[in-house]
Image 1 (cartoon, rainbow, N blue to C red):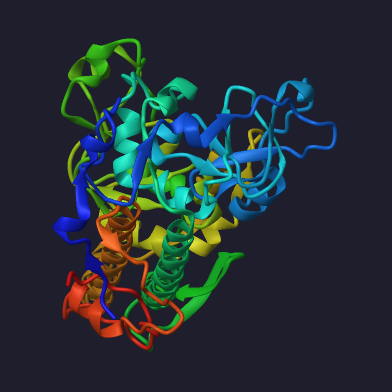
Image 2: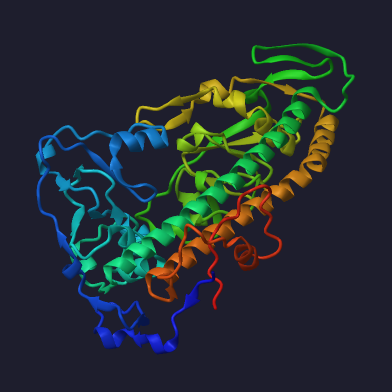
Length: 477
């Protein structure tokens, strides 16, 4: 069974249904209506009850207990111990307008409890099926409409009930809301299942790549080379002609900073300002944010030369890995980073490869800071002893590893692209269904096999590798 669009004869101009405060729906099925949002949701004004547990509003998980959030992210959050009675009471299946709702929509409450008083808690009416509105409030079109209700000067500016009230909502027959939610739950489950399979494949590929790198940077390329005791507690032996040096003995180390945000001229420039969010690649040529020559001249920020190794030394990413990258252009860095400028005896790309290859040992040095985040103390990693081959051999190791990992890198790129395609597909499908562009009333998700349609939708190059492709496609009939 294929999904179909509503026929033009079954649609009506949305503006004929209602005069929008914020125009965001173009057409609607004739049997849908549009009403003011306050008709469907009322602000819950009840204060926290004595037995309410503290909740966290998150973009990724919705509104969940703080303990559950800590378990999922692997870190502690600040617990509120005073004025708990001032917090807002939340019932399961309420919706919450949080400080990030202008970025990612409204959050569904999965538990009863209390939340910060600055957030808006919305109580659904009897005609609301929370499953349907959970998808609607996260859809791209709805979020864009929310953003149009205010001029956001900075990320984190709070939305309020007035913003919510300016975006009118579709009224969908209750049973159709149930069908839409059931269908989208099915789609999301199948997409998540396929994404997890792809992520597992990526993990296995990364393990294979890591093993290749680790062996090359700790034992070299000659399988018959004579070995000697390394002298390092974490490494049993190294080739006899290699040296063992502390990191601080082979590099110059520079830190970073954030120029004042109150000086706009510091942020109008083209010099890359690298932060952990940019450290998703092996080589850095640019960054999301940039600073100016004025910032370099008038603040304490250092200009890092090309061919330096950048390393993240603070942040929650250190729970999983220590990102390292080689600069190909001069850059600046923020305070969560360190720059390692290699001495002449070190081939820069070898040092990047070495730090990547001994990642598990560097991770053992990660500690928890006073604020609950993770950090690498300078006195720990700077004094770490690492194996250093002769310069000519460093270059040979880099060339050989690049040859051996080229195919793995290509497969990783394909797998990541496939994940992006799946997520984009789901986002587009959800938007089309919740706004009445696609009709799912007659779709029985329990007995529908959409495998062939999905492959057609995503393209012949989409490889599934032993994954059950029992997934919904919305080919247009």
